[in-house]
Amino acid sequence: MQASKISSKCKVKSVKLKDKNSELKIQNSKPTEIHISGAEGIYEKSEIQKICEKYIKRALTHSRGNPDEIIITIEKIRQKPKTISLLPVITLDCNSPEKARKIITQKLESLGISKKAIDNGFVVLNSKKTMRGASLILLKSGARVEPDKERGVRVSRMGIEKSTEKNLSEKLSRAKINTTTVKEALVLASKAASWPDVIAEACISDDPDYTTGYIASKEFGYLRIPNIKREKRMHGGRVFFIRETADIAGLTAYLEKKPVIII
Image (cartoon, rainbow, N blue to C red):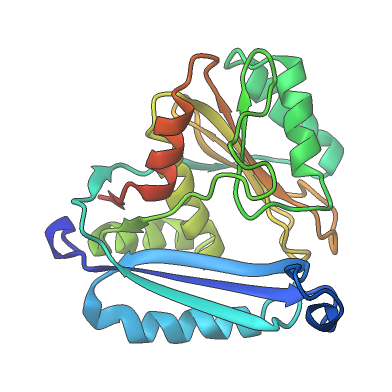
């Protein structure tokens, strides 16, 4: 997939209403939603129908439950995508959430991230109320600075060139981790790490059946951490640890709006 041929962004979101009757009970309030699944990518026009079918199937069979609503958005990409490289992938040895926390703490501290910032990050990662997007935490003060603390910052408009994806799949297959989950997370982490103010990322999936999380940084790559949480736990989240002097508006615009292609 050449950057000049990119035509569309395809995105799917599925949600479940906590109270299916709440629309009738509260006329002027939006029903409370439980986020079931989300996925997106940048594709050529000829691929869109196949991709949408794949996304719909994924939403209907997700382990977080059956959605009451599936929303598909197809948007033409008008801005020339930036091209970046993938982070290297390493799987660490970890047999418990307690060990995972120690590993994450050690790695983040090695990057100059304060204990307060790390502790605040774990509050987000372990929260039962998951955001659709990520939290932005200043690496020294530990302050949360994302503009919308209910929604977070949603990383969007990212894709991977076909030959690069093929090579990645071959590499991940040799390590027996060639899954859509790993590839999508790696693409997202690579985009985030390419912004200068992002020092590190930590992520735990809110999928109750997926217990491998990761931390990522330009310094050490994409580190997969097995057993980061116990099975059947619904909590999860994503945190970006950023410089104290970070351009919050610029970072948010880059993560949410700037098209990026992995080459």
